[in-house]
Every structure is written in C-alpha cells, then in structure tokens.
Length: 304
Image: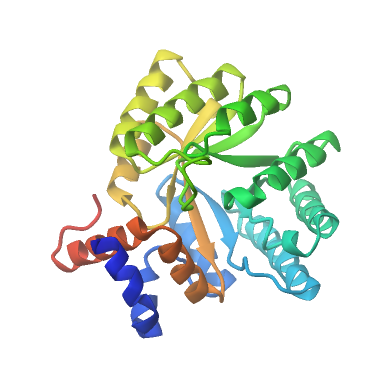
C-alpha cells in the first residue's frame, strides 16, 4: 500500500524533485555524465554497461537517433579507455515499428561494437517482447556475431524452456528477477517462487556452459549465488555479478573486495524523467525502495 501510494502521487511531484530522487540511479542527461560515472566506477574496480534511455520510439527517425547515440557511446568508450559495454532495448531500436527495422538497427549497433572490440547486451522488456527479443538474439548469433548477449527474467514461467532452447548457443546471459508486472499465468507472483526460479535458472545456465551476469540486489540470492560459484570452482572470468547504479553500493564494494567481477548498469539520456516515472509505475516496489533509500540517506544511513 505504501509503494502504490507513492506511485499515485508521482504525476504531481515536480520534475526537480523527481530529478533529485533519481539522480543517484541515473548518470545524467548527457554522454559526458555517463562517461564520468563509468570512469569513477572503473577506478573502484567495477566494470559498467551503459544504457541510452529512450524506449517509447514513435518514428524511424527516433530509432535512428538511438542508434547514433550508441555509436557515440562506443567511440567515447574506446577514446577514454573505459571498461564498459552497452545495453540496448529492442523497443528503443524500433521493434514496435517493425521487426526488420529493429533487426537492422540492432545489427548496426552490434557491428560497430565488434569493430571496437566491445559488447552489446539486449535487455529484456515486458513479456510482449520476449519472443521477438530471443529471435533477434538467435538470428544475430547465427550471423556469427559473438559480441552479443541477452537477458532472462526469473519471474517468467517460460524461462526454464528458454534456457533449454538457447543451450546450443552457450549464450552470455544477464539473469535478473524481472521488474514488469505480469499476470499469474505468465509470471510467478510469490516472492519465494521467484527466488527459487532464479536459482534453478542460474544452475541450468551454468550447466549449459553459459557466462552468467548474476544481476540481483537480493541478499539471499547473493549468498546462494556465491555458494554456487564456490561449489563449482568458477574462475573470475567465468561469471560476474551485476547491480544498478546507486543501489546497495557498499554491498557491491564488498563483492569487489571478495574478488568477484562486478558490473554496474549506468543509464543516461534526456529521457530521464519518462524513464524514472515509467520504472516506478511499472513496479511500485521500486518506488518504495527509492523513497526508503532516500529517507535513509537523509538520516545518514545510506549505502547498505
């Protein structure tokens, strides 16, 4: 009820206040903001993945602008010697305008990344895009593009079968819980069921020889994942942990001290306001987390 109450109030919150709430979790509106955020993370022993904000694409020109923004990101990463890849959303590349358009745009981003020795992660969005996202991933992999990975969501009931279907590709996968509100026939609704699905998916991916980005802030899942890493005697180059910018930074620092590779998701762009509202409205629990975390920082209890 607390989380949903916050969400209902969001449209009435002045933009400067939303900006203040979100600035810890979004690098800023410009590429230079992402650059400095990544530079600071690299200095702390953390890798990064940069995301250009902009999902509600309505025209081919807007999708092309997102492509150009990613090409600028790759050039900046190379020029500055940053340890960072990128994440892309298929809706940002024009999926809702046409599958072929999106595939061409995605291919352009992946090929530019390959020319610079970089990597592209295809984000997973709501369940209406899952089939097309996995189809795009397979098609580009079958075109011999190896510098590309995908995301799977533990909350989706289909994830176990998706892992089996991708097994032949030995995919690089970011495994997350998932943030989208989905109906019960599509996604697990119970907290513990999602956790259990996450561990099953992690084990299945490792069994299939996948490189897994263990993306979670859940302390229980971090502990279980750490146990699995030790039991399987995985080397530092065989997996990584992943977290969001500004979320549980002290826990992330602990992972680095323990010798794990950690990658931080760094979103930036001029669509920061729309991104902030959409993410909070899609999953009210995030709104509650941000409010609680902000209050904690004001009281001097930040960084857990």
